[in-house]
Image (cartoon, rainbow, N blue to C red; front, side, top):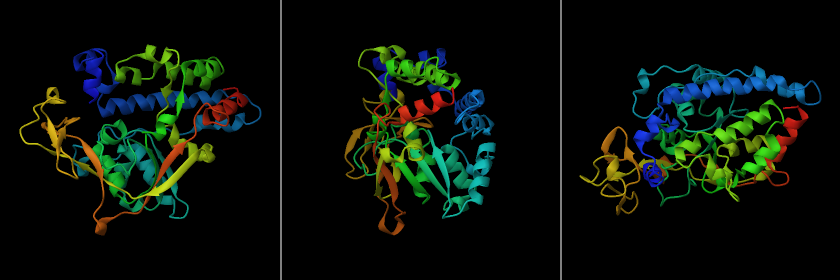
Length: 344
């Protein structure tokens, strides 16, 4: 489905590779780019002025940053993979936690690192609480949910997370995460030239790699009346302004990959044409949305389905509504005030 959207705006896989589009990177390069970028960003907090709350902000510059896994859980033999520094640090911290005083783990993007930690050290499952945002509501049973990057990029890791029994606060990207939006005029007025961290946020808004992934470029977000969704921000709201969050208990689902209709899938060019799959619930046929990159004759779509009663896991907590970023009392305003107080 992503390839079809890119095709609509004249972007081909060949062009993506020629332009070094981040969507074509392997997991190891994506991890390294994130690691190096985070190192630089954390150091910016050392420029906080010496007044008010600033010393607390300056201490952020001392935060250790570790590399994560260089391979997805999907497509590998877990027994032949070594844990990264980040995984070892997570396991160490989780081991020191308890059921009643757990380690809260904010998971942004595909849950590769969290799932890997649970596979390497399953005994930590009761000692952590995961906050993860992805896809549609966990109660959705009629929609392909693997089209979301966070859910579908490493499907096996997503399955491990959902089927592990770990306590989780889940943020559906659709529609809850979509409420977290900012416009280019707001970002320019609030953050441009206001300090080291503020300016870095402004530059990131302008140069976010998602403009490459969509194929539409930054110009799309400069048009009057347009905004950009600030994906993944919702995971942090419970620690900043919990009053903006409404949540409910939901049953933990399984993530089930569909059965492909035999002899219909023949590579990426068959998406939306001949490649067909069966709905898990009704076994009716439907056009496949995504091909398995490891097997071009197999549909890679996945749905949330119910566990059998005898295998049912603990309930999870799902965000129903998140307050916006730019309204009075919103998390964007809260961040702005804190950065201004610290001269950042």
